[in-house]
Every structure is written in C-alpha cells, then in structure tokens.
Length: 611
Image 1 (cartoon, one colour):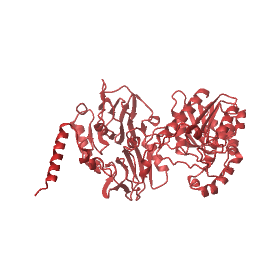
Image 2 (cartoon, rainbow, N blue to C red; image 1 turned 30 degrees about the horizontal axis):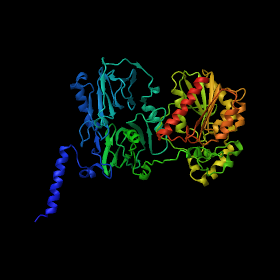
Image 3 (cartoon, rainbow, N blue to C red; image 1 turned 90 degrees about the vertical axis):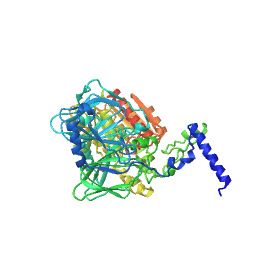
Image 4 (spheres, one colour; image 1 turned 135 degrees about the vertical axis):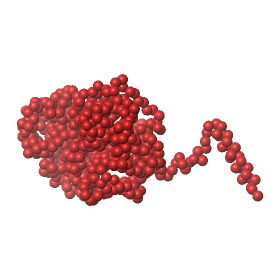
C-alpha cells in the first residue's frame, strides 16, 4: 500500500514543476550535477583526419565545385561527436583548396583565422591591402575584420589548414561578415620576412633546431611577446627520433598538424597513429603525450584556444594549484596606503621585506640593487626573434632592424645575456616606429659567461656563484671595450650615422659612464639600473632617460635625476620588479606584459625626440 505522505509529496512536486514550466522557469536542483560537473566534460572526442584519404575528395571538389559556387572551397574537419563547425568544442579546422588562376573572393568577418600552408606553390593571400605569397609550412594570420582574398598563380593546387574561432560565435551570437564589391581587395606585395601577420617556416624551424633537448615548443607570438590573438594561439614543436613529449592535461583544446615525420599519440590511453600532413584534435582535459618513430625528426604545428581561456581565467593544467585560482579581494583602509608606499627602503627592499642576500657583492660598484642578486630570471619560451647573430669586432652580436636604417642603438643586456624577453625588446625598438627606423645591436660583452638561473635556486647557490662572477663581470670591462665595439659597428654598418645607447641592469652603469664628454651617443638611457650612483649623472652630456622599478633605491634615483644637467626624462614603474623589461619579465601576466610594452614605448618616444 502506497504511503499517503509520499504520494502527496510527489504529487505536490509534479504540480510545482508544471507551474514552473508555465512561467518559463526551471529548477536548478534538477540539473545541478549536469551544470556543475566536478571535472571538465567535453562533448568532442579525439579524432584523426588522414590527409591521404581526404586529399582526393578535396581535389574532386576542385573539379566539380566552382569558385563562384563555393566562395570558399573548404572541407570542414568535423568532430564525430558534434556537427559543423566543431572540430573541438571551441575550435574549427578545415582544409581549403584554391585551384590555378582562381580567386576566393574578398570578404571580412569577425572571426580570427590562422592558416598553415600544407601544399603547393604560387598561392597568395591578400590581407587588408597586403599581398602575401604562400610557402609550405608558413603560418599566415587573418586578423578580425580585415579584408582578405586568396588566389593561385601557376599550375597545381594550393592547400592549407584553416583554424578559426567559429565555435565561439555559436555561444556568442555576435559574428559579422561583409563582402567586398570586387572579387579582390586592392593589394600590393609586402616583404613577408618583416610582416607581423606572417611566420615563415624557415625561421621557425631554425629557431626550433637551435634549441637543445629532445622535445622543443615555440609559440607564435607578436613582436611584443603577446599571443597572436585574444581567442586563438599556436605553436610549433620539434621531437627528436624515437623520443616522446611529457604527458599534458590542460583545459585548452588543440588541433595538431604533422609537418614532418611519423609517430603516434596516446590520448587518455588511446593510441592515434599519424604521419606527415595528417591532422588530429585533442579536446579539453584529455591527457596526451606524443611519440616519434625512430626514423626521423617530427615537427608539429598546433593551434589552440589557450589565449581565450587565459583571458577568461579558465586555463589550468593538472599541476595547477587549485587554491591559487581563488580570487581574493583584500580591502585596505585608505590610511594604510601612504605607509605601504613609504616602506621602500634604501637597500632595495620594499613593503617591509628585505632581500635575503649579502649586499656586499655589488657594494664596490655603489648603489647596488639587492634585487639584482636575489630575483631569478623567468625562462620565457615561444618568441621567434626577428633578427640574426653576427660576429662584429670579435663579439657575438644580435642584430635586428631595417637594412636602410641610418640610426643605430646599442643595447646592453642584463646579467642573463640574450634572454628571450631582451631580444623581443630589441625587435620592438627596431620595428615599432614607422617614422623612425633603427638598427639595434646587442653585443655579447659578457662573452657567453651569463648569469644562470640555477645560481638563484637558494641562498647557498647565490653565495657560491654570484660574488666571484660580479668581481670579473662588472661594468668597467664593457665600458673600456665600448670604443672598439663602436668602431667595429661603424665599419660593418657604415650607413649608420647616428647612435644611441640603452643599458639594462648592470648595463645601465655602462650607458651612464659612456655618456660623458666625447661620447658617440646622441642620446642614452638606463633601465632598472643595478649600480646607480648619483654622482655619475654629473658627467652625462647627452639627453638621458632613466626608467626605474620599485626595487631601485628611490633616494638614489631622485638624486641621480637632480644631478642630470641635460635634457632628461625620468620614469618610475612603482609596481614592477627589477628586470621587468628584460630576463625577469613575466610576459604571461597581462598587467606585467602591458607595463613591459609601456616601457619600450617610452624608450621609442625618447629616441624619436632626441636621435
């Protein structure tokens, strides 16, 4: 016999649910587990698209479907668990074909696109007035709302892999598209080696091969070190024969394309075997690792949604400290702000925390920065330098910038040498000012004996390595060598008739000491200087810029500024650490990246005014 209380309760609940339907409401408790799963639960599944099997069908489409019929002749790579446009739950991929003498007509759209060139010669894309030739392995970007069309000269097909953020517009119905009045948007040829929307494979492969290790990853990044877009990003990877990648589990989903080589991947324990020109996808939170066959080196191209997830705060890996993801709002009484600001001490400490390091190491150079001896570098990966290395005056020298430049800038790196963030900074200086062209040089004054990250592992390591290193690698050596270096630069680049100098960290001391009477410099700058002596400023005879972080002595920096008797500009980044524009720059953090860019913008403004 049914319990009346239970029966009445069930009946009342049914009535409630029926009444809720009439009000267009639903009970959350009925779907709580579905809407709040304990772990990511993607709908898409891992899948491989075999290029050998698909290519004949793509060519058949080229014979049967005209350019007018198709607008874009593309075979979408559709995940078997979803419908188009989903390759993963957040990414779209497709194989696009353009036949000889065809034009894929000009249009523009909100979606952002990355294109990896798979096959063919004579193909081109025109992006907002810039005609770019396609070469196998190149990655070409089509930024949001840029007019673009594609074409093909000569014989044979042109095939590439499209990667777009189209699934986002299913969830955010804000996509726009517009067709140009003619089939082609007016365009002129550009030098792809200097274009910010082209990543030549020759350069990326060289960068991958120059790195040590059996598995190397380099992301495609803008000149300022940021991702290529806010929604999509990408990277190239190299894996030596017979080697494997570390296992990864992350919230980002990815589409992989095999540039060269063969092997297999284990994705949640399931084996996917691949070879050259195949494409496969990895949805969010699947654990994956790659294995190269014994015969040859493997090269991957990958695009992913990591930038979007980072922007939203959704990116994490299995190793992420989940407690660290909590957003904590700390409310301070307004009266406490001046007190905090006043706690920046002369010895380089701030907010009441003194560096745990023997400050006598740099005392001989006056105005030491304890932070320089205590903050380790950040190993940044993925940036593809625009310049090249040359031997000039016996020194290995990084050289970047226009061949027609008549103004040169000598950049003195920090104690970590040719760090990725420092090379990015040099490239920004060389390419960002359309009205002032610079050739930027970074001579290896430390002769390859740069400070190492391992020296900062603990107090014992710092005491073991840094004192002796600073004794033999101080500013006097570089200052003494500078005249010969300048003469060698002038001989190698005789078109340059105007020179400036920037010194970072210990290099700031060199920039100051070489700015006295008789200097080659027309203007000079020091950035987060490590050995700041106010008396040095009295000898400076050219316009001078000084950029300080929170870690330099505020008192010494103020005295230095007062002692400058030339045109000057003084800037203080009071929430940035010593080294924020070179090897200690954390470019993965948005605010720090913006401050890094702001610092180089100030340098460009200064040199535009005085060089």
